[in-house]
Image (cartoon, rainbow, N blue to C red):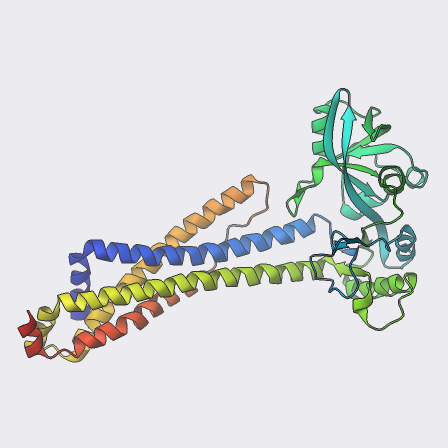
Length: 415
């Protein structure tokens, strides 16, 4: 067996260019497998980190189109097929506030308007939110204060600036008590929020917060919300609270059927959202791995072709070895070792390249402010090495058997 391994190594060293190119082809495929798994772990970490931005024990209620599953990506905007869902009202939020496990809750909706200060006019996101928003989202007010219940219900023209919006409008200068202009009306700045970062690639710091009812009546001219967020007293009762809020919303909307697909809303806990998004990330990861494995199979076909060429070129050598006593198993294992060495070397190099590439991806993601975790799992290494060796064995076996089956006299005559 040792002599077969030695002959295999010697043969590969004699054909350096062919060997290097084949190893390179395999290593690229393996590197992609490692990188995809690492990227999947990183993305999963980002999703969980983004959800943690909203705090622990949080439950969300959003509008959805009836007869559409609540996991549909048409839900979040409250729009589908050109229809805007307007059935989620302020009194629905107040009804849910009465639930014993709801500590804080706020309704919300978003929009975009030109905001003026001095001679400048900037297009910015507006976030109409209830007065308990910072208590639900664990948002820190850096300067000034957040608006009160009285200001929200009184349609007061007050505004709280996200940290980024403050920088863009005031360049970090004193702004409490100053006035900004929205749709030709002046709004007094009463607070500046601490930096929050991004959530799902959306910069939370670039928003201007207005009292929900002020935003509804004075800016949008509507009487509905698109979602609400609540913090629970006891997060361990999340599933029961989800059922309770669902029942409250059904009563509010006069929904009597047992078919929950008829609901025009969806109630989601953060744990449920994390599981759902985690499953999506996992599905995408394995889909990409499957695609990469197809490329590895193509590489395996290349190995088989190379081994066929090698058998054809070394027919005389095979005949000579057989004539001096080498049996079929020895010839078989010599050529099989060559295929396995190529794929194993490609696998080892691919793991190193994949680890480096995964690290570069993590650095790039972190440069964009994402909480990206660098993690090369043992499972990805096991899959990479195992698959590469399997490819080498499968696609190297037939040429090796063909070499072992050669008649020594015929092989010597061919030369």
